Length: 29
Image 1 (tube, helix red, strand yellow):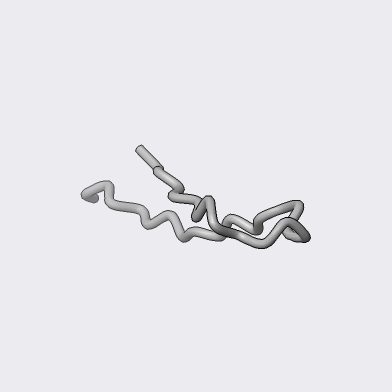
Image 2: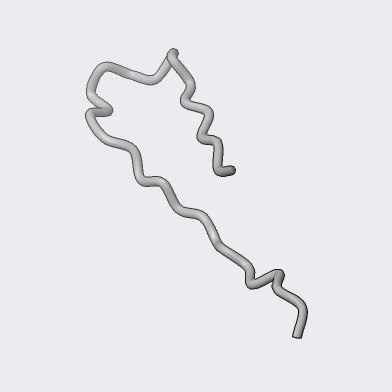
């Protein structure tokens, strides 16, 4: 699962958030 925590104290001029995360291949071969 992926969870994003957004600070509710962000300024009012912040209309959008850039969510960036890296997915790692954890399958065994």
